[in-house]
Length: 287
Ligand code: CAA
View 1 (spheres, helix red, strand yellow):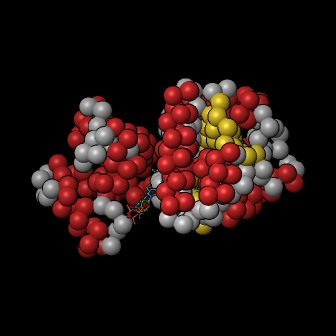
View 2 (cartoon, protein in one colour):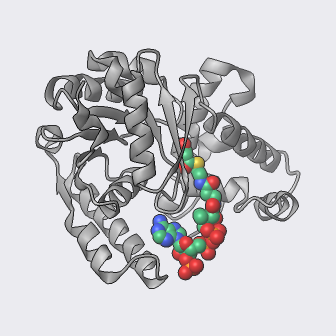
């Protein structure tokens, strides 16, 4: 381990999807050089378009000067080549799909090709950080860096300590959170951590209530917004997060924690039909 960890200058973000492009954006806005990597050029272009939209919105609202907006954008480069994305990184943030086999393959690669001083972060919402870390061959420098959607607006960074994560890695993760303007919490590696476990249980009950005809999607959401002051109802939040993402988390938590997380048939059907929420144009609502 070296002191470079406390001074993250270059970040590689793996995945240009909803989470990846948001993470790239907040790192670039905080002054870090970012290499955003995805497997296809089209995914990178879509991610960059999202970043442009979000930066423009923040500028329009007075949260970012024109100079800072342009400078942040200029700090982001894109590539489809994994090796070139990570080979000079101080920090890698993995935000690829929630499949353990993919994470293992990626972290095995990172263990070989990322610089030895680099921190290796995973944005997994519920998978075992300890298992992902083992694949890297150097678990001391692997940590969960769990961001929330929409990344530029949400204040929380959930830092997940794997079984072998070094204290120095946690310290760097905390310093990184502060630098990008997030409020960190540090949690033990346990299925669903402190956030997804509670968030998902509300979402899954809302889907079951919809299935049993308790109320319309609009009214279930309205109930939580007006009755409990949630900023969004659980069904519209599912649409924001992505129903495929929700299903993947549920399948994992069902296996790890039991029946209360069993995915409802309605959710499976919607995902099979390609109704994934906002990103596909339809979920519980049409966009
Ligand atoms: N970048 C910049 N600006 C954005 C943005 C983005 N990515 N997304 C939204 N905005 C802007 C909106 O355009 C809007 O601008 P105007 O005021 O000019 O219209 C502004 O932010 C506020 O948005 P809204 O008017 O829609 O109102 P809001 O006050 O409800 O804020 C919200 C939106 C922050 C998304 C809020 O509804 C909220 O906090 N929702 C809950 C989100 C949440 O729970 N996220 C966690 C999901 S779980 C997860 O991500 C982790 C996981 O593991 C799956």
